[in-house]
Length: 131
Image (cartoon, rainbow, N blue to C red; front, side, top):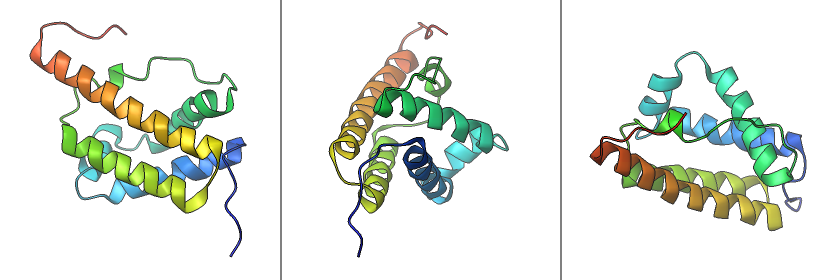
């Protein structure tokens, strides 16, 4: 069996993102939510995710935008983020090992906490996220 490599190229990012969202799309808990919101725009969404993770993990600034606002009104709670993180970690561990792989898991963990916190805040207050 070959040794896993770290996340170092845009091809690695694409493998991670494509594999991860392939799992999301068929997940019993998450699939309906993601497929319902994204509909037939999956290629566009995946391209955006490539750029986001390329910017975050490879320090190649190709993503411009605010990642939170599109998620602000999703019908999600802790169990959804737990499922998201399980698939995220599982996908990383299947394909990669190293400092960037560890960072990807850490960043996913932090993003899940922040997104859930903000979703709950906006759900319970009259404020709206800045676009």
